[in-house]
Length: 322
Image 1 (cartoon, rainbow, N blue to C red):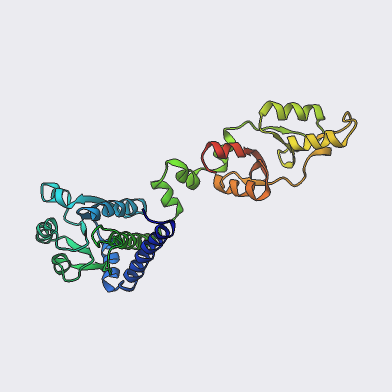
Image 2 (image 1 turned 120 degrees about the horizontal axis):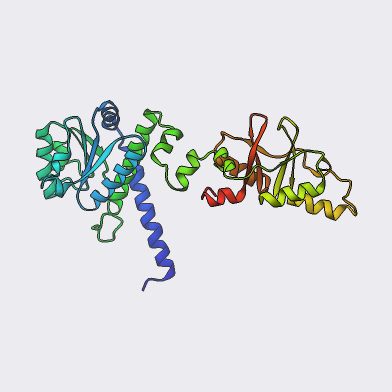
């Protein structure tokens, strides 16, 4: 059993070795990388990403990143390709083949078939003297010194280099396409990530009641309105629905602490006159930022200068935005 110190040293050593491999990949970025990006951007087809073993797993991740950032891609397992899956490749598709050595039996069988079909073949390979590197039209160099595995066997450093280079390729394509947050939201509609990108303040406000009261309203009416809508606050508005202030349950407590009689008090006497607000078409995640920055739980939603509704912190929690 390793000592605590040796365990920590082993972890640090692995990470340092893999970090060095990524830096080495960065140094090897050359004209072929630029040609790969240009070829994909100008292609009328898809990107087919293939590999065997651990490289196949990395290929699947690269495909997922491509698809989510605007580059249509399909994963094809190299072993399945030579048993029928080659049929998924169309004339205008570009093929990226991942391989640590570039000399595995499946790659040696697959590569000539890809070449004969006339598709552009890109080799993401760690050995530049390999079969794949010699056959590929363009090379993405993932050369590395050694695996993090102490026996230099288990794919670790090599797959880290592939993964990082795949990310670099995806981000270059994203930037060249001017792929923005709105585009990203279209491909990520589900979960908290999607909601952060498309859910608007108005969507949350519309699911709530719209508590409002005039400045001349009595304290009793204020309490009824706050209790009835269960948002812990009420907006104080004029006859044109312009916001004059807000009364929260905290304002009510402070009023009771500071006044021996409340019979003559009106809403305008206890309201906060500088309420925090957000425009109805702003993102819900921006509403969360305002709530956090001001340490509040309710936020008024406005349509231009008109009262639209209220967002409560619980709304954001329920949607998984927090």
